[in-house]
Length: 158
Image (cartoon, rainbow, N blue to C red; front, side, top):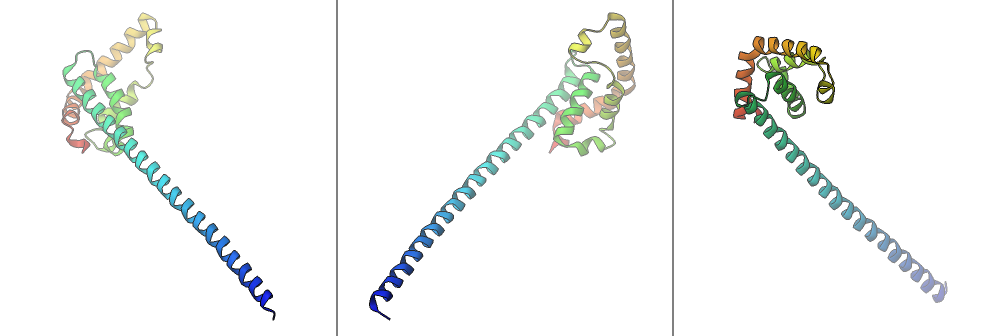
């Protein structure tokens, strides 16, 4: 073999090694950047989840407190709000016997219109629904007061 051929093959080999090394280095850099970006997205998602979780917890305590202390918050409205909040916060709480009353009142009032639909109701129908709500509130008042006290303390939310 001639020395020129040996040098040419050696140079070609070195060039291949350098090219592959550069490609490997670039791939390693890309993988590192992707890992860092993924870690940042995960940290952001965790922070968002924790903030949302904290918001739900505080909202549950506020609604429960309003049931106890705010005359404007009816037991029916409180149950509707608590049902939605608890379903998003910790749905298994609604399965417990103590908190099942929330779902029960919610289910018994789910046929009633809310917000704009409520405002658009004729007075006679509105009055009929209000009587139905008052009957439910009288029936479940004691149990709902207990639930509201527990939830406003925040103890079952921990």
